[in-house]
Image (cartoon, rainbow, N blue to C red; front, side, top):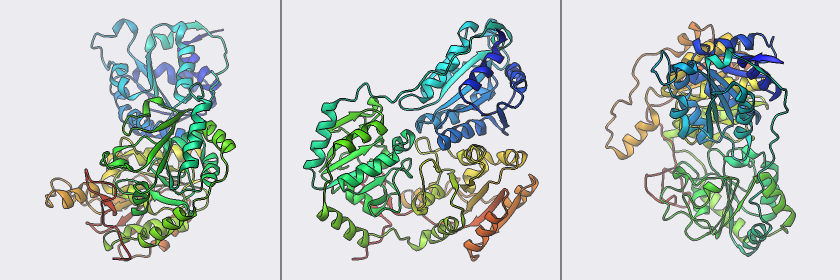
Length: 558
């Protein structure tokens, strides 16, 4: 059948199982939006206040569902407004397909109105991108974009479509989506055998798990394997939820703002089993001192991560769900009683307690978890509040803690909350924000109001850019250059301007009482949480120091 290019795109989206797209219309995507209108509700469109919000929402939709998130923007500034969201998705391996319009083919390269080479701009921050120049290739390119976004290590793909291809006609043939199989072509039996040998020879094994476990849906396989090995587990920020934080094996986050227990264990183990993690600089800090006493066994789907930041002694490349399943089948139950006893002694000596400088944040996080229903999703902005949420929220499940880890995108959380809430209407979604991050994309309150999304936004309000101020205090002689946010913004009144509820949580208020009321309203609420100006995220590893050399931790024996 003959269809316009825009209608072809909608047909492919529907065949790929897309039920929701996030976007903002403009001149070069009017035909696409017309075709969307004619789908008669088969695809729900969420109109965000800004294209960046659409990209973050699509990213969060993908992270929370495991499906591909889709966003749409027009050419020029519409397309460039997606850039930060695409870079965020790329750094955190999130499957997103971004569809942009562009000027007609004849006007490309002529500095036409709202023309930009968006494929050139996004080449370093997408897994792949296309500019379609032949309408006969359009359907297959869009199908391929979905396949690439999902296969192997997921990531964002951009498809740029000139306007004349959207209105032109082409013969359309219905095809099934390209099937995605787990990546196993590099998975060798000999590699698995050697991995098992290394584990059996180990006296003090330690697991270091990252976001790859969550992305591959391998959390159950990981739990079984950890029990067989009988070892402690630490996590990256992106790996939170991959292993139960309530387990006595879990030592918490590792790295710059990890626990003393995790950092000590990594630098005391004799075998570090790295599962779906990339040795970020925020984890390893000084690479020359990181786990130097241990052999490193790295399990990852992406061969580019092997020996990139830390040289491994052995590696297994393949889909983690498959790799861990096969290792479980090969592994006999191990016992490391002395090592686990040492772990428990260190846990008692170095508890995750706060100094006075972060006690209020801990109280608020624990109160939040106390009042939330079982079905909930946490999103965060980036900064101190992000680390407090990661450190003190204990009931984190896979795909239920959504944060910007690799890029560290301030302004991510509100759009992410929209994507999570739209995809999970039966969950309560809370965005843990800082006043600095929230002001970047608080215009998305308009989207929350438009679609009546019952999102709670906690603004951890210390009237400053808290994490930068913390560094200025500790390492820059308290030179508070441009980090004090003393503009008298009334966040409750701002919420009211959008028709949403606003609540205040003062420093002396009971956070359980206030947050229980916010949750009980079953509607969108912005909660202005006053916290002290100089509350800090502790413990902390100073820049360039060994992860053993932490400041701000508590030693009960000293």
